[in-house]
Image (spheres, rainbow, N blue to C red):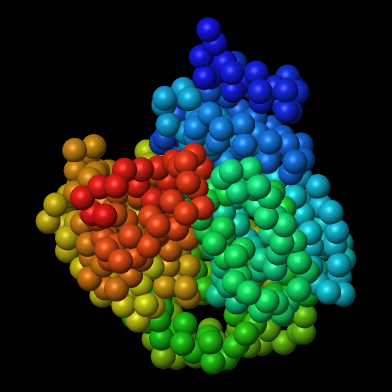
Length: 469
Ligand SMILES: Cc1cc2nc3c(=O)[nH]c(=O)nc-3n(C[C@H](O)[C@H](O)[C@H](O)COP(=O)(O)OP(=O)(O)OC[C@H]3O[C@@H](n4cnc5c(N)ncnc54)[C@H](O)[C@@H]3O)c2cc1C
């Protein structure tokens, strides 16, 4: 008699063809591990459908046999959400083959794409029509539209354009029982009933599989001004942020914080050196617009910053190449950290005025429990979002460090996941720290949409009803 795995493999091959199902251990290896090589799973197989109909049939086949499904996009997620467990029974559904850019509308300023389209490819395609898809992150050469939507990705453009959620106009989603929710509307205004697409944005594949989306575009930025500024401390950085908002208003698109220690890592492991040396903290600021005049505004800001004592050094990019080189420093931080041995990562946010207090309290906590730790702190200061990464921590101390940072965050009314999601990495900390009513409602939502508990089990909402519920 065939076991359930064999029956499922047979049915899945019948749906997508033999070539669309990978079940060889070597072929599946890259799909079973995350980008950071931190989570390792053993899937039954990897299914690569070519159409929404095939996704729906594959999901229905898994649901009928009660086997877990793990949606996977570019596999660049930082919370282990796309990695299966090690049972050897879960099915990865990869969106790699569904990568068509169906329609670009430069007048309505929308793009309709399949979920497996790579962010960089979509950005290049809309740029040809003088339009911009304003999501920018270091993984954009691999991250897929479906993954970005499923994680409600942030990145360096959030300050001006919001998170991915703010750009989603329509969605097509395969539900956990194989039904298809077709909501691919190109509308900016649509108040007809519940806004169901919001349920799936940021749900990390735990409520359904995004198969296509309509995204809002904005005019292409024609002029940009980019500066790197050394600041004496965090409170000076916050004062500078307030002034930048006043001077540059809606043109201000990025206000990033990088520590001197982070720049040292980039120099050592990536061979890229910064134009500013020896500062504890640096800012990377960018303004962009269809109109000119930004350079002058940036110069005025720098002058004010020096006069007020908020800046100790600074460079304004003279060319696109120089601006790109400044951004390359920022974008190399994660890789440099990985090459230096990795870190216990925290993706935290607090109200921006609480950042100084958070850094002080978290520093005191670390000095107590892991005095040998080194920090690589960087992130989207303008969004109140820092990647508070703790390096040089022993395996034995990791849990205490993680919980300690999250406790400080909770005291400062912040979030333990600003943009990377919970995945499997933060799910138990979420259960520990979240209000019981919020936990119970999340559980209820999951159970309502995913009656058999097959859609990305254990991600976002803990698998078992535990003591917290
Ligand atoms: C170098 C680097 C820099 C990064 N910078 C940022 C940053 O600045 N901001 C930020 O927010 N993130 C950042 N990330 C994280 C990551 O790029 C984003 O989370 C991205 O959105 C993941 O997209 P993906 O296609 O790789 O998704 P995956 O990693 O494949 O999946 C992520 C989650 O989404 C689910 N999923 C994937 N596709 C679908 C789908 N079609 N339908 C339903 N669920 C799906 C998966 O099950 C999983 O839970 C970075 C990652 C790296 C490696």
